[in-house]
Image 1 (cartoon, one colour):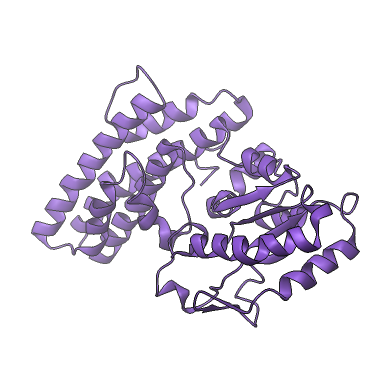
Image 2: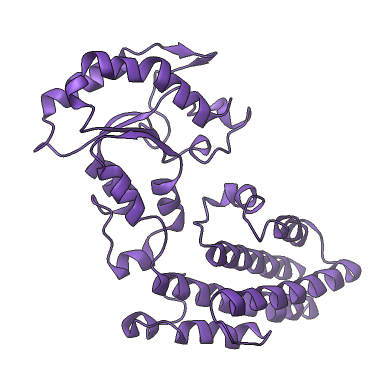
Length: 313
C-alpha cells in the first residue's frame, strides 16, 4: 500500500465517517485529499522514503471565513487530531515534519498562497515565468477525495499546466542551454583536458534535456530527486531515463567520451525532431540553437517573446 492508498483508506475508514457524523452541514463547503509536498503525493514513496515525514493523513481544505468561520475551523482541527494515532502499521506523527504540517486542516487560500504565491491560483505571466516548476507540481499532484465546494478543483485546474507562451519560453531557454552544454562545451572541455568541467557540461546537458522532455510532454517536472522516477513514467520519453543516467554516471576516458559525444548528438537530433512535430509543425532541422530561437520567435505574446531567451530558466 503506497502513501496515496494509505491516505485514502485512512480517510474512508476514519476521516469520512467523522465528517459525516460530526460535520454533515459542512460537507458541501470542504475539500479533502492528498497532494503537496512528499514523495507519497506523487506515488513515489517506498520503504526508504518512509523513514521521515510519513504518516496516515490527509488534507481538509476550507474556504474563506465568509463561508466557514474560525470556530468551525477549530472544531475540525480538534476532530482531526482525535483520529486514530495508528493505522495499517503506521503511526501518525507527534512532531511537525520538515517544512511544516503536510496534513490536517488548512484554509484553501493559505495553502495555495504558500505553494504558488496566489491564493486563488490566478498567476500573471511574470509569476508563471518565475515560479519554480516543482511548486506547481506539488500544487497539482496527488488526488482529491471530495470537493463539495468546488473551489480547490477550480484552482488546481487553473494551475494544471503552463500557458502556451510560458511553455515555449521555457522550452526555448532549455534548448539553448542544451546546445551550449552538450554538443559544444562537453567536447571543448575535454580538449582543454578539463574532465571535471566536461562532466559538469554533461550534467547541464542532461538537466536541460530532461526539462525539454517534460515540456514537450506537457507535464510538470518534479523536484530533482524524483525527476528520473517521473521520467521513467513519462509517455513518449521514458527511454531517455537510462540514456541520461549513463551520461551522468560514466567517466570521460577516450572510449567513454566518444560514446557520450555520439549519444549527445543523437539526443539533440531526436529532441529537435520532437520539437518540430509537437511545437513547430512544418519546421525541419536538427540544429538545436537555431531551433531554440525559432521556438522563441513562435511566441505570440510580444512582451514575453521579446524577453531574453533565458528569462524563464
